[in-house]
Length: 101
Image (cartoon, rainbow, N blue to C red):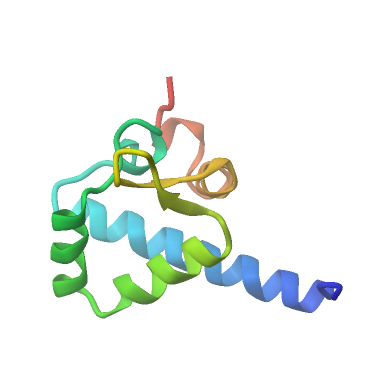
């Protein structure tokens, strides 16, 4: 099955909305973007539970990020962005917004 440009555009819009919402929630709860952009860090399950409690949007965004392969649970069972997720995030907020050095 091929993905039409309309579908691709809609998917990117949803991803960008989720990344934006995720960034806002992280900041509201005392986290920084590096929490999800550096592969050995990430959000643990307890933090994700807190974010789900704080926002009904979190679960939907997490699902969209995972289904699009923009985020996943790493080997330490922490939620982090993939290369695709980081690329979109940096495109939206700029490289300096989340330094991946």
